[in-house]
Image (tube, rainbow, N blue to C red; front, top):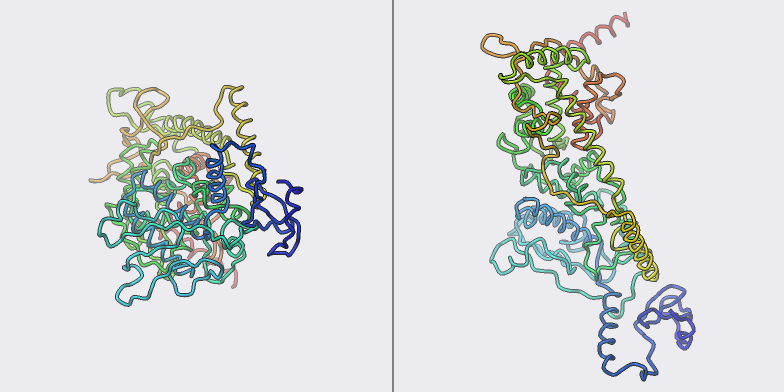
Amino acid sequence: MDLEEAKELKDRCSQCAAVSWGLTDEGKYYCTSCHNVTERSKEVINTGAIPNTKIQAINRGLKRKRKLEKGWDWYVCEGFQHILYQQAKALQTLGVGPELKNEVLHNFWKRYLQKSKQAYCKNPVYTSRRKTTVLEDNPSHSDWESEPELLSDLSCPAFVESGAESQPAVHTQKPFPVVRASQSETASVCSGSLDGVEYALRKEKGIVKMTVPRTLAFCYLSLLWQRETITLADLLRFVEEDHIPYINAFQHFPEEMKLYGRDKGIFAIESWPNYEDIYKKIIEVATFLDLPRFPDITEDCYLHPNILCMKYLMEVNLPDEMHDLTCHVVKVTGMGEVDFLTFDPIAKKAKTVKYDVQAVAVIVVVLKLLFLLDDNLEWSLSNIAEKYNEKNEEDKPWFDFRKWYQVMKKAIDEKKQTWEEARAKYLWKSEKPLYHSAIDRSVVYKRREMVVSLQKQFSTLVDSTPTVEKKSPSSFQFSWTKEGSDRTCFHGHSLQGVLKQKGQSLTTKNSLYWLSTQKFCKSYCKHVTTYEESNFSLSYQFILNLFSFLLRIKTSLLHEEVSLIEKRLFKAKYSTTKKKSSRSRKARKC
């Protein structure tokens, strides 16, 4: 930028009326006071130094650069739409059916735009510049059954594949037309989007503002509606492993979508998604959208506790025979009922089941029923199993809790170390740098190029690569084989050492049981119970830490779920405790 050459322009700025001009790298005048970029450019006086054969090519390059520098007009909701589209595509590559992207997620997003008055309505909240396309009132079609129109004028891929346009399907959508900034409009200094500043300041009661974490809530609601084989913990783990765009998702925006200033605070994420936080957002979004009751979760669905319990028993290398006991607990507690499992946002107390947390909590309860987990009985039973296995090497081995603990302790420690190293090496800086204003763009890009160059030089010196190799996606984090003494597979082991015959049925040798929570918090309390490690046995702590790491959740959350299952399983025990406490209170009063 040359301020001396820009002095010849004596016109006043249309924005601030100042006469202080500078030149951009493209030769266009900009106001040094308010950074308003005009369409006027400095004329080239001497072209003798430029060969005639090159003039045409240089001009073409400058025109293209100006077009990209100006960018398209776009709204914040269109940025989130692009992120949702990329996430839906990623889920499709993971094996999810195309109808999730083309129908379910599209309709959820369309309903959100209408409820938040951003599109599909007569009076959208946008008051400046371009307006979004709205739906005409059609009494013959409901909002869910009407043919999808354009969400906006953004040149972003629609939620339907381009090849589907020629098919006469009802749920097809036209591609977005290319909309370029008009010559009369000037670039926003505070944000690349038209409404970045307005969106950041917007605080309307009853409106759920869209954020990047809420895109995961939309994805999970779509998965739940389709009853897909991906739990919430799996979804967040796939995000962590970079199979689903989330951190720096904005770098997948088209080059013409300029993003800076206030847009940075809206689209830039600097933390991993949290299970409890996303769960709360799922409830918020579903309630705000006023969604109807979701499809029933039946026994043949992947999210049913009987199926998920089998999955997690395989994951943590426990005997297959435990599945009969987990199914029995699910049946007795009524957690396998359709009404208990099916999500209904319009119910009085809208809540969806934490399917994965509930399944592992059932396994914890069964382990307590079998081994008590009091740092005493489980080791005594292990001694019995060890002696039996030594004497009967050819028979089916009895399950040895101590040996299983040693194998799992080593495996989980290795997995944790790998996970922590991957997190420490993760590059939070995006390949597409963010800057506060258009004037800072060239400086930020030069700094980014310098950083990348230094990283390459350093990695060459230490003979290592700065990025972690992406793993192929899998529903399982552990793979157990019968080869190797340190990787013993316990799936085929017998529970005969901890069960005994009683009539025509089997029952546990252990007749004792201790409750994880003696007294629950009051209804107005935010949590059901509290968890302090020092109050519990080391075996119980290990089991909770193992499953909590697999699901990437807090240990207290799993402990709470275990307590709730015990409350349903031992109703008589809890009611007796309640009566005793009420009697003692009456005695004190007397």
